[in-house]
Image (cartoon, rainbow, N blue to C red; front, side, top):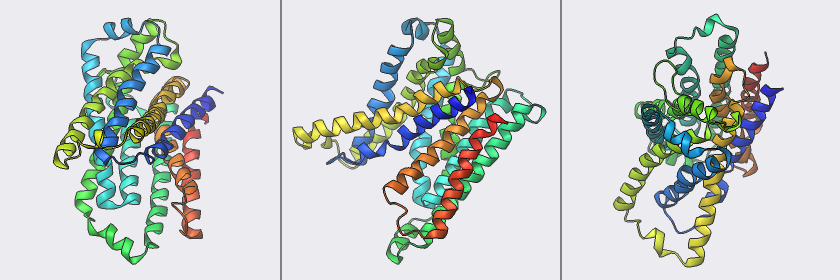
Amino acid sequence: MNSILSIVLMAIGSACAASFYVPIKKVHGWSWESYWIVQGVFSWIVAPWVFAYFTVPNLGAVLSNSPSGAVAYTLLFGALWGVGGLTFGLSMRFLGVALGQSIALGFCAALGTLIPPIISGQNLLGTHSGVLIILGVSICIAGIAIVGYAGALRSANMSVEDRQKAIKEFALKKGLLIAVLAGVMSACFNFGINGIPGFMDAGNVIQKVAADQGTNPLFVANPVYIYVMFGGFLTNFIYCMYLNVKNKTFKDYLSVSSNVLVSNLLFCLLGGTLWYLQFFFFGMGQSKLPLGMVAFGWSILMAMNILFGNVWGIILKEWKGAGRKTITVLVLGLVVLVLSTFVIKL
């Protein structure tokens, strides 16, 4: 029962993350770099502190008793994850949405799940849970590939004008390198949360400190988010400030009317909070996984993120006119992604 509850909790988080862009799209008068860093303040700074404050008893003691080395590595992994988020968009720019997303998220799911137990010295092929992790990751990647193929089919049905726009910046070698980089760097978020036990302690030690301070197992990851997301914020802040200078968009923050300013801030608050909730529920769901399957939680989250992202795409009619074959392939891919999460019941 706990395994199913784990999947449900992570699914709720992924549904929140997939809904992130709905309020963000209602931001008016601001360039990408302006609204991106504003929502980042809410999702990477404000939300982690607020949720940790209300769910972690003795939060101050948890933070002060966390080893400085673990905190430093958590911040470092967060900063590297921030690079992954920035390069993820570039991978789709040079490869297209279907191929770029498939490669980046495939690497993110595989590396984020498999690297910690492998480096920690676990023989995944020698245990039942290890074999299930490999099986689940393989099925997840297969589902991502099928969804990517559906995206390729949809692109083939694009108008000549749209196809020319897409091909204009197509660069296979550059795109592949960036997509791999995006996947590897994005996987660092999981390393920040759970560390690489026996090799590089990070959030895993902070979670133990939280547990020792009486924190409910559902919420032991919440103090970790304060550090890992701050690391990601720093990376994004530097890049967005660079774009503000380069594009002369600092005026965005003050050039809109007071009503639009308040509206933009509220939509950024809502979008940022929805984005944060994916990890809030991920931490809860991970706590319900069998001990030997904790590493597989990351793969579940990636599968659910793609699932609900495409569900929103269908709702918003992004797949309109794609054709029966394309939709059939898409649905097949989404079903495979769902099935990949249920290996924990085998």
